[in-house]
Amino acid sequence: MIAVTVTLIVTWSTVKVCQYNKRLDEETSTINKLNKEETQLDVKAEVRYFKSINCNISFIKENYNLEKLLIKIKKIFSDRY
Image (cartoon, rainbow, N blue to C red; front, side):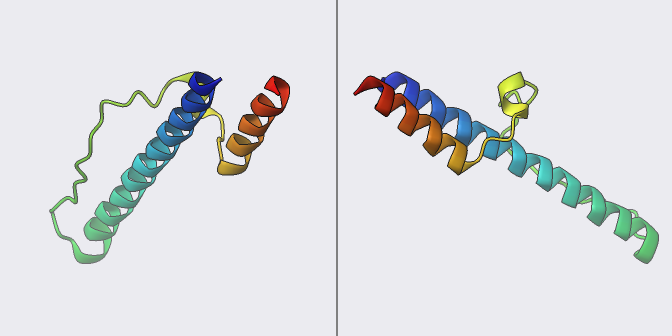
């Protein structure tokens, strides 16, 4: 029971990190495009973050949000007790 709850929390956290990293990449791309088009600067913005999380795993592609996580945890506890 505790292991399942911890797994759900870790899954949710991983999804949020992947979503954040994706958003950083999109914003960096936008900044680089603006630099090139508007200011004709030949410099590139870079983002450095820990990339060892595999964001291509199928469960990460699901849209996990906090409400879904809480519903799953409540269901686990209600089924158990």
